[in-house]
Length: 185
Ligand code: ADP
Image (tube, rainbow, N blue to C red; front, side, top):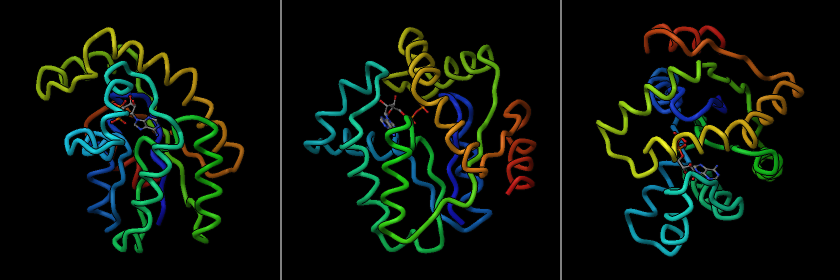
């Protein structure tokens, strides 16, 4: 099973992906986590990505595709995976399709979490207080939401056109949302 999980920052993609991966026995691939690990490890790629991430902008398509391709070549993805944070613009959606064609794979479902903007701002403010992520300050959060609306929202239509998109109500308890996702799959 190969899934793409879509939704704005703070929509709960990471939380839900962590639950789905255990339930479906597949791996969770978050490009944000891969990038943060590269930053923490101080790799060349991490050094290039850090300022972009701190500003709430998207890291270059080439860098993220390389990270993703390396990850998809690891053996633990054999049973399937959930992509969280990728693709984030139409060019990435097309690049993913090309990469999957080379790997002889396809995406089974794209799931889009729908959450009110007010709720998102509240959740991210809480995450900022709890985790201190350097891109969770209020002004950067606002910018990330803007980047989402401009660049990532069209990706939802891309999967809708392919006929594999399900929109999921992302408001409610973690368990309720998890159940909706499982029902959709
Ligand atoms: P969120 O979904 O809350 O914005 P992520 O962990 O998915 O958090 O992403 C954090 C940051 O990492 C993004 O703002 C962006 O700078 C970078 N990033 C993650 N995934 C991608 C991607 N696919 N393409 C470009 N940049 C990315």
